[in-house]
Amino acid sequence: MNPKAEAQDSRFDLVKWLVVVLLVAVGVVGNQYYSAQPILYRVLALLVIAALAAYVALQTGKGKAFFVLAKEARVEIRKVVWPTRQETTQTTLIVVAVVLVMALLLWGLDSLLGWLVSLIVG
Image (cartoon, rainbow, N blue to C red; front, side):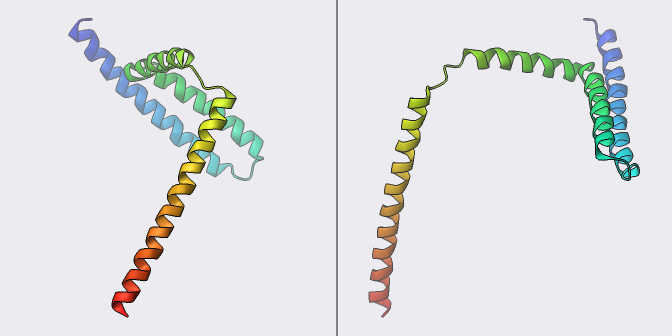
């Protein structure tokens, strides 16, 4: 891309981000202003405003980059080999056992040191 087009995009990106901030502000102020209205209507209005703000944000350079990152992360998550239920249970039990053993060791060491200090101090 040529530098003139990139400068044009960045200028429009600033305007788009200002629109996003304005939409969020309208949602916050509108929710407060219409606090007497039923919550369902306010939530629906906030969802519409949030969708509009997200759409405008995704039209910016950073928004497009974020969308590409999210798609790539989803592809990577599909590649992960998740542990089975049995493996998860066994690992959890091992962690619990090690924590209990360490807690007992630290409790015993603390009691021993406390007893020694009380002997020295008197």
